[in-house]
Image (cartoon, rainbow, N blue to C red; front, side, top):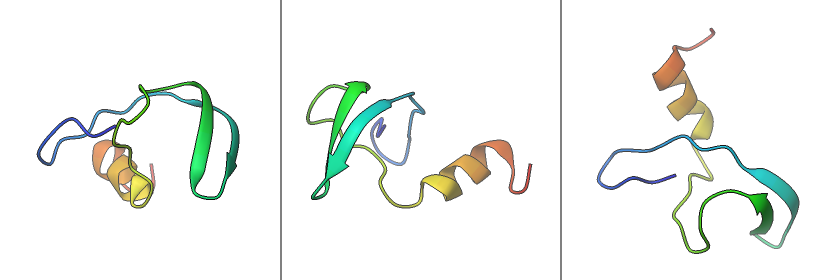
Length: 52
């Protein structure tokens, strides 16, 4: 989840379904929150180290 500037906060989500570029979450950030949809693997690799 976007936390302002170039900072991001990792948060768990439970997805019920996705269609047409939208997702219905059972659990996750508030409606309208900015979330990463592309580049998530790169953010994860930066946080935990690539290939770990």
